[in-house]
Length: 113
View 1 (cartoon, rainbow, N blue to C red):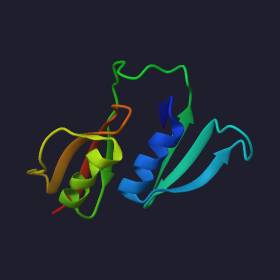
View 2 (cartoon, one colour; view 1 turned 135 degrees about the horizontal axis):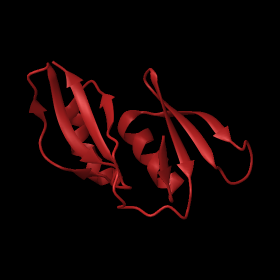
View 3 (cartoon, helix red, strand yellow; view 1 turned 120 degrees about the vertical axis):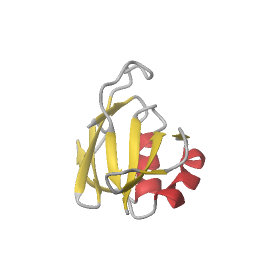
């Protein structure tokens, strides 16, 4: 789960970059507190909290398996994220790129090779 002061921005980022689809919303009507997104076979929960401060230290890393890392990298910055470097082939059989979402959360885009 991710906590964000700007739910709409973060949901738009993951929807447009990874094709995430909303599967749950709490409450059903009115201002949203929790939203669940489905990304392929995984769930990503996003909690709205306007008081959370961005940039505070984090100790988590979201890793998402994707079909084509390089194709997604070209879209990250236009969607408000940050590319931290080019994709690299790793010895464990993945092509990996490190990015940050619009809130600054660390995300690995990992493609099986």
